[in-house]
Length: 450
Image (cartoon, helix red, strand yellow):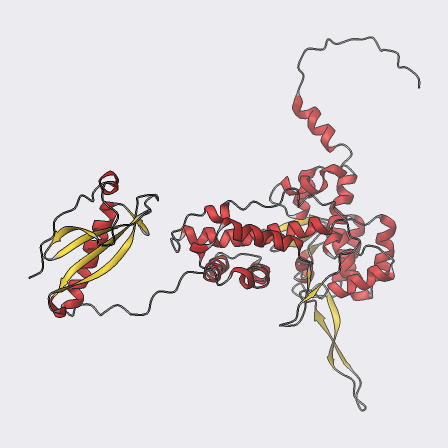
């Protein structure tokens, strides 16, 4: 006959502290040959459950339930107080009886695989896609290139602050990568570029933000029960995004436009006239231009909203000429694309086609080289040129933000407010008000000559 259980004092943390440390568990009966156990360790305890198993000759079947809340705060999943441990034990006992009665299959003997950083990223990207995230492709590229190779196999519960901090620092000190074939890694030379360290820290911060978003999503969906302190404690580099905005001066604009081939020149001029992003331009149709209103419409911007960009007279002339003779749904900007190589008997076959992603990279570099623009600008810096030109001519930040499609003026002010000759002064004078402590005077004081 199995010996009876003498109920041990397990219900409170104070009662368990008075128990002697031992490997043999202390048991508290739950009825019908079942009991809740507590194994007292040197630093913390473990909850167990056992039930009499008649199929095993009257012996017991035993299972671990989780850690006791002796030193850690109970989370109800991995760290349990007495009440949660008893409830979990009774659930396990009931499941055992259902299995013994043939009402439920035996659980798989294969242990559950740990939930890794790769799993967290996959779940986050699936949710991001379902929510209509606009940067899915680039976010996945960041994960594949910078997060998964270093941390992908690590269980989320084993991430530490030091591990993530060292990874974040390594990102900031590694050279920038160049686009290359699968399995090939190439890096860009940064010698002599004083702004390169800041840009690497800025890139490391963006990658860290992606990782934190994935881990926070996993924690919020209860896919992991560990505390988020491990990644919350890793802070981004300070002042990494405070780089000087690069923009072209008027003579550089002229040289760049003249150095571009015809099809690409139209894209460059459109970017300078509108401040539109490359992706917005290649998706633009001829019907987006409205001569009566003097605007061009971006149907879906990065923020997911439609916006109307006001054009100058020069901009209207350009878009009117570019859209002439095209159906409203026809692409506004096209290029010649090689369809078939020339042979001994046939000439090369060229067809008109839309611009694709990244088709702008090589032409803008070649044009900058031909125009002797050093350092070379990216296509996106044509957008900065547009906004900087408006700011330097005193256009209000709200107007610039509307033209660029920013949700508010925060980003606009961050990048362009310092270029506006009157923005700061006008804002201070309009907002500070009059203290009333300096009396009005009709006397004009003499100024000392220098």
